[in-house]
Length: 162
Image (tube, rainbow, N blue to C red; front, side, top):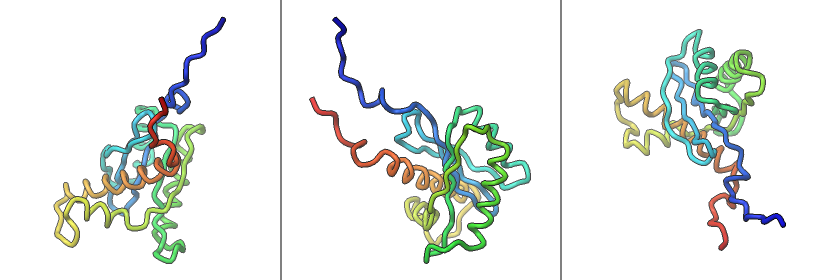
């Protein structure tokens, strides 16, 4: 007779890492999920350059990332503007250098940098370069964590029944 053990919720979840990106004109903030895809953590800040897509592709391979989430800066009315177009061009260039199985998602990122500055107590203040880099990473964490929360749904936060 085969004994069936109750399946732990984590067994059902795909073990994968997801990269969150806050793309700016000067810097790109990166965040990385844990392997269960539940929590986002700051990773690093890159300078925008002609080789940044390859640098991200190398990170994707090194960290075994299966999905990339890029914040799309929509206007407050929800329409796309110049910043959105710039990020979409970046996403297209990134898609060309990533392994074909890595999926790219674009998500609304309105006000994530403002929220990051507020959470660090830097809102409206002059910031050093290190503080600006940290703001970019925290904005990427906000983008990624929001995506993870939406993907998991409310039931992911419920305790298992005895």
